[in-house]
Image (cartoon, rainbow, N blue to C red):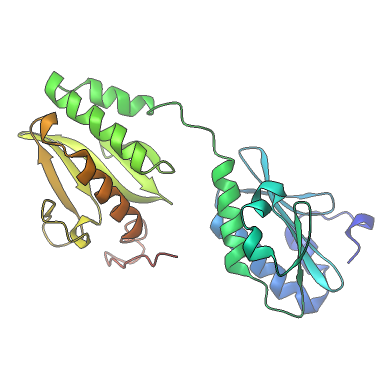
Length: 256
């Protein structure tokens, strides 16, 4: 497919004009990229499908007679050198033969890797979380500040915001951990904590999978325990972001 001689309106048109035998594969690659990086912006660049995140190139793909070219930039390819060793490569490019299954799982990993690289570097906590902490009494503020610092350390790629009036950290849109001021202290809650198998985290009502611990003093926080819980929080997640769509039913997210 000679892309240099054609101008395509968008990616669906590009796929529609590709040989019918590979259109399904091209659609699968497009879906894989979009699911791995929902915030990516699609376009046609250099005559082929292109994706950007935060204005920075993420990946490209192109159809050829005997292979599909995938371009995740030098950074994306060098990080997966071992997995790509079986394929013909160039600098920042790899050729996936069309007579073999396309490694969609590997494409997903490469796209997620580049998406993370394209995120702006953190410069501290969001202003709304800092403002929440500042509104607390001196003792509670110390608890909130330490919790925020350690959560950020344990979940460096999480989205952070004030949600339902208190600070919450999210992974891929799913609530993971947050804290809130109660009458007897500051409650740290893990949305999937009941599945961690941790005795210090008290399960909620049983309707969901949350579990929590309440701190009356900053001295009660055991940083090493918190680090272990945060690691479990990345590995053990229940799908809260789709709970409304599933009419209140929770399912566990399979970790890849």
